[in-house]
Image (cartoon, rainbow, N blue to C red):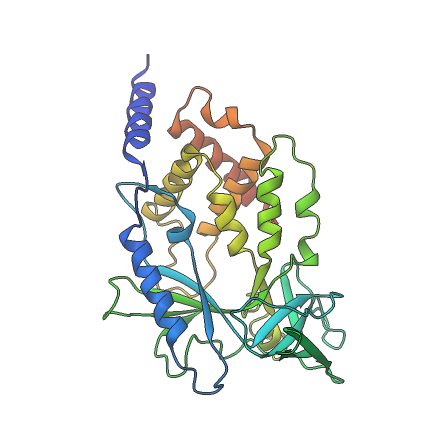
Length: 346
C-alpha cells in the first residue's frame, strides 16, 4: 500500500468519524435565529403595514453535519417584505396568501426582458413589472385584486434591510455587525418572494435523471417552496443607466437548502472539504481588488449539485476515499473553467 493511499485513508477515517450529525441546534444556527427575530420585529418607518419575513440561508441552513472546523464566517439571512409579491409571467393573481403577508400586497410579474431596453435579457436575470394590488377581504377571507393600467418596473435600489441601517453594501447584501446579540457579522439580502416555481426553470422538475436524485418527493418539496428574486443586476450591466437599476436575479436559495439537506453525510463532508480548500488556497479571495473573481463558493455548490444528480450513490461510497473524490471534482471544475462554461443547476 502506497504512503499516499495510506494517508488518504487516515484523512477519510478521521473526517467520517469527527463530522458528527448535529445533535442539537448549533451556536451559529442560534445566532441566525436571534438575527431573524431582530429583523422580524423591527418597525419599518416608511410603511406602517410592512414587515420583514426572514429566512436563514447559506452554510448555517445547508449543513446538518458539524465538522471540527465549521467554516462559518457570517450569518446569512434573506428577508422579503410582507407588502410585496412576485409571480411568474402569465400566472393569475393569487386569492390566498400565507398569513405572513399584509392586507395590502403589490404583485409584480417576473419578466425576462424589457422591449424598450436593448440587450436587456440575460439568463437568470429578470425584471419585476407591477401588475396587481391585492386587498384582503375579511368576509370571504380571500384577496381581491385590482389590475394596474400602467407598466412600472420595480427598481433594485435601496433594498437595505431596515430604515437607518448603517451596514456595508456589497452586491445584494448588507453586512451588519449586531455585536449586541451576535458574535458573527450578518449578511442580509432583501428580496421579493415568489410562491410558485419560476417559468425560467420550468425544465428542472421534469428533466430526465438516471440515478433518482433528487427523488420525486424532494423535487415536489423544492417546487412547492417557489423561489425569490434578489435586487442585483448582472455584473456586465451594473454600469448601464437603466438596466443597472432595474435588473433582478432569480434566487434558488430555498431550493438549495432542501437539496443539500437531502445529501448523504459523505456528500456534505466533501462539500465542506471543497469549501475549506477554496478558502485556505484563497481561490475566492480578491483582496482589495473590486474586479470579479474567477471562482466562487457558488461554483463549488453548482459542481456538487450536478455531480449528485449525474453520478450514482455508489460513486460516492465505492472504495470510499474523500481525497480522491475531491480531486476528481476539482478536475471537473478545472474543465469548466478552461472551457469557460458552468451551467446553472436550475
